[in-house]
Length: 134
Image (cartoon, rainbow, N blue to C red; front, side):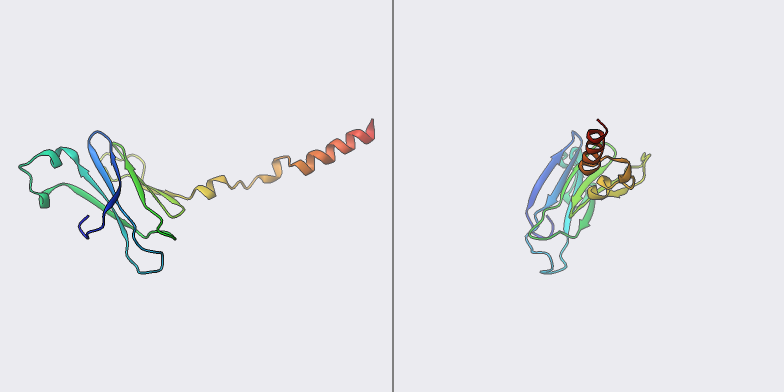
């Protein structure tokens, strides 16, 4: 990494190399961010291209608590990053169809229609009513 931090996560999808910096700080210790970098692997292998001229996309994230790590993978269209309790899907390629977005998995599990689901309590009430009717 440019700032001297080691990498902890490396992902290669056949064309792009995605690397995540290792978080070496406690949350709140300072405002230091952790970087994700995406490189074109073909350029990395081309000795004619100087390191400073390599194609590179960089993104920074605030790490979570207790040395939490930022992880990232990429495919042909998106960069998917997990940080804190969030999953960010960055569609930064020119041919993107779906815009970039963030997902908080806990929110995906919440359902506003909880009344429609039968709970153990409601089932036991129905069982008691059926027993009394028999």
